[in-house]
Every structure is written in structure tokens, then in C-alpha cells.
Length: 442
Image 1 (cartoon, rainbow, N blue to C red):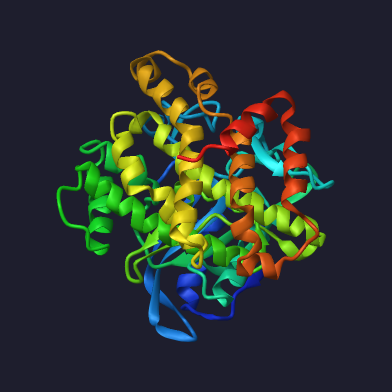
Image 2 (tube, rainbow, N blue to C red):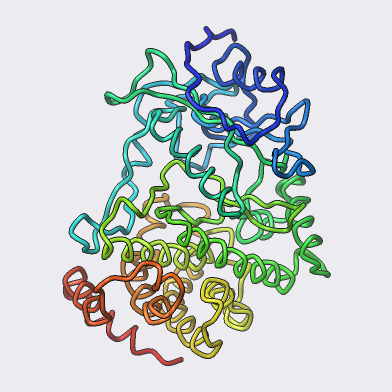
């Protein structure tokens, strides 16, 4: 199918990249549908292998071989979307250009946040157009990638931002962003925790990606063995803790640290951040809210790790003995709080595991129905209260945070007693249960 090229304006181009004019034009042509962008995964992100590698001007030996084009359209084939929330009204095996039609499903997902008054609150994401993003978010991904790059934090590398002329969504101009990396595989770190690693044989390429990560990390043994998988999860958890600590130190907040939002750089043996369009700068907030938003990001990091052990593909794959024995949560916290005493980290970790374990075994009990009969909505109703867990994590970890370099970088008048009062105001009658969880000593 032939599509009409989109009118556009190039608004930003990063000068720190050496890339040939021909290669740059090929990417712009794909982003504007003069040629069809290449989608290797379901969603609104195209992925192109460069015909001529680019490089960083200040690191000429570091080649960049892959371009990510975000907001340039949508790919929603039935084979990849049958058990997922729908993107298009009708599945399509061919990529479609960006639209200004609203993507309504994802905006209903509740998130734990901090409101403008500095109180805990449930918030919802903003409506987005199907296959596209508004120009402001395209620029944000580019801008945040540049900040991370300048702070030597593993990230996608910004290349360009375009504005689509005459295309708007909800009164805002639409656009697209092009970033670079050196990893061709269209997989994310989630393959290690709850996708390929727990579903061996389902996708040969995903299996190979997970196996390659294990080999790169120096982990020997059968990749299907739980102990091998736990070793890989532990190493990566500690790395992610350090990366997200550095992310906050760089003055940024509101990254979703789901393992599906990290790619892996095999050359440098590290995960890197990749979805940056919702990230904001802390300098826009008051001092007290700066600290609260950093704490909220920390709570999200912990929740995203723990909760994914309860996804359907994990319910036969992780035993409680190995989860608590290897304790990837303690590894995550040790990466984040490098100077914290291991015994204190372990105690906090056990308190948080204690809040999750009853829900894990409720899901395990119903695993057969979850996989064959239950809707996504019913399964989600059996998951632990994510807001309770966020608040528990923030409250437990606040003393470590207060004494860390982050606490010194973002000082405020916040106290442990104020955090408890915030929890009580938000939780209401659940506060009694919260106090009980907080008193757990392992």
C-alpha cells in the first residue's frame, strides 16, 4: 500500500553525531513516509539498521548502527496483538502512518503519583494519538537523551526531531523523534525476567537474546535453570539500581523503570534507558516536591521489579526459596544505595517481600484460570495494591535516601513523621494494615 508523504519541518539535529547526509536523509524519508518505516515490534516505534554506521564526535570509536524512530506510525498485526490491549480498531499486517485519533485504552491505567500539593495521589496518563506523539513529547525524548548522554548515563543518543506540518492532536502539534544506539535486536530487558527466560522455545530469537545476555554477564549453566535466571536478574537489578540513582542525580524524574523500558548494550555490558518522552526535569518543582518525586521514582523502581514476578509467565518459574535466597530486590537497593549497610538493605527487602508474597501465591493458586479463562481486568484485580506498596517502599527507604547523596542534592523540610501522616491521609482505613506491614522484621 502506498501512502502520501507527510509534510514536515526539521526542528532539532544533534551536532555531536557524525552521520552521512545520505543516511540521515534515509531516516527522515522513513519518518515522513516518503519511504515506509520498518517496524520489528508491535507499537509506534520503527527500527532501522543503518546502511552506514554513525559515530559520536567525542568518541569516534563508538559506532551507532541502529536508529529508533518514535511517533512515525503504528504496527499492530494480529499475530503479535491477540492477547494484548488493542492499538488499532482492526489489526493490520502492514504499518500505518501516525493518526490524530485518540488511543483510549492506555489512558485508563492508574499510576501512583504526587499531586501539586505534595500529596500521594492516583494519576492517569495523558491521551496520546494512535501511532504518534505530540511534538512536545518528541522534543522531550530528544532533550532528555541529551541530558543523560552529557551525564554519562547509559541511554539512547539523540539525533533529530521533526514537526509534522498541519497535523495536530488535542490542539497540540504532532511530531517524531529519531535516536541512535548500537543494538540491533528489537528486544528489551524484560526477556530476562519474565519473557524469554520463562518461556523457552516460544521465540528462538528472544531465547538467543537472553542466552547472549547470560553469556555476556559471565553466567554459566543451563539458561532455562532457575538459578541461572536468578543470577542474571540479580546482576541486572544491581545495575538498574545504579542507573536510576544516576538518573535522579542528573536532575530528571518520571521514568517508568519497567524492565520492558530498558535495552541492553552488549558492547558495554550495561542496560540503557530508551523511552524518555514522559521524563521531566526536577528544576521545575519546589524543593519539597523535588524530593517527593525522586522518592516516587524510587518506589516505582522497586514496585516494577517485585510485581513482575507475579505475571502469568512467571507463576511456574520462580520459587519463594530462590526469590528470597537470591533476593534481587536487595541487589536493586544495593545498586541504588551503594553506601548502605547490607543488613539494613536486607531488612527493608524482607519487609517489602512480605507485602507481596500473599498476592503472589493467590495468583499461583489461580494460574490455570489466569492463562485460560480470566480477562486482564480480573487478573489485575488479584494483584497487590500498587499504591500501598509504593508508599510502603518510600517510607521504608526514606532513611537511606535522606542520608544518601540524593538526599543531600535535593534537601527539603520533609521528615519521616510527615511521610507517615501523608500515608495516613491517603490510605484511610488501610493505614492500619500499612502500619502492620511496616512493623515486619523478617
